[in-house]
Length: 335
Image (tube, rainbow, N blue to C red):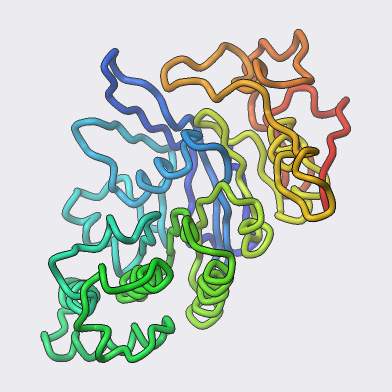
């Protein structure tokens, strides 16, 4: 079942996405039945603890999972009506850039230290737009200017180590924009940035989205980022979607205990740090998911029904939860 639905024609539609990875003890499922739809100009957030399957979901959509160590299946995987699951690796490489852009989590490890940032932006233009070298170099400078890099002509000749963390992230955004994609996947785009730079990066993404009408998928564990930029949110736990909702409804009235726990653990200015809550225990290891609800060993509301495998079920227009006890629970949200 899809976790989200859009009233507009979807740019990207995913249903029944399953991903297995090869471990020392065999194949293990890391993404189980994920589905969503995202329309033009919409922003979808994927949230959850580390290891919940957020990044693997998006890497699988973009065809970036290692082929010999992973297996990807989906009932539906369509971008602008095109079946991505039917494409060869070479055809998928032609989709990345012009149709799907990626902003990776750590720009210093994603950028090539041996090439100038201008050359790395121009490479996308030469590969996908077939631009001559000189024209691509000129366009690279224009893109650096658009993402707010000062003195772009000079900075285009510099190497990644000569940029601050925030400026490297702007370079990554310029690379993602070079192909003029329909969808941008931003994997923890503000990790390790101070709050001022984080706000600047998020505002830049919003501006570019308004200009180009792109669909944006934001992968993050930061609920502040989710509240700031997302329209719809998928909450993932142990490879499954456990809740989906419009962002403001999700924060106000969560329908799954895991989301309630995430909200309670979020730092707030109106209470002391000592009052912060935690979710007991730890997420299950890959290949060792518990029977029934995967969250029930950590859930303070767990009862006998939770030993039964739950399905993601609609609870209101645009909302779904995987909690079996949701009709009888009143969970605490936040403003």
